[in-house]
Length: 178
Image 1 (cartoon, one colour):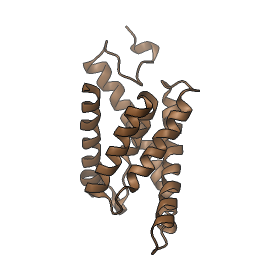
Image 2 (cartoon, helix red, strand yellow):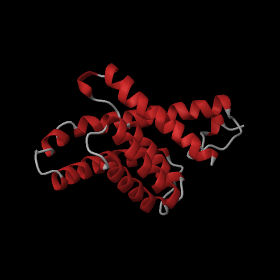
Image 3 (tube, rainbow, N blue to C red):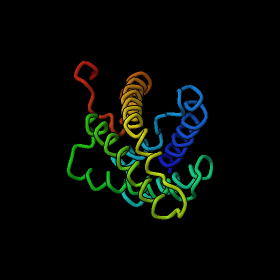
């Protein structure tokens, strides 16, 4: 239960930073999707049912505070979570390179699923040019944010929790091990 509470706090911070802070700091309305990175982390380290319920709830909550179409982020983030869960049993979930690759693929899948959902369910509007145009820049921003968050989490673990296990950060470079 404590882990879920920590995840909710992290997701709340990600939504606030993404929606309020980064949208003011970065030009052109572009901002990394921190919630997507968190969902990919959940997919790597949480059980399917608990993680799916958490991700779907976070997607709906994000739509309540920052979305235009109720349920859109719930659907898209749940699909990404389930895709990551399908991959995680076949790969090393502790790999930083895997996380970066999943952020790349997750960003592309998020764009495709958003286009599908909007074009399929919304009668008016042509949404795909608005999503596909900035998608390459969005992918780069998401990967940069994932890299920085990975480095920040590693620094945080080494500084404040040097002997504690943090999922996804078990493998440290040999010069950091005691």
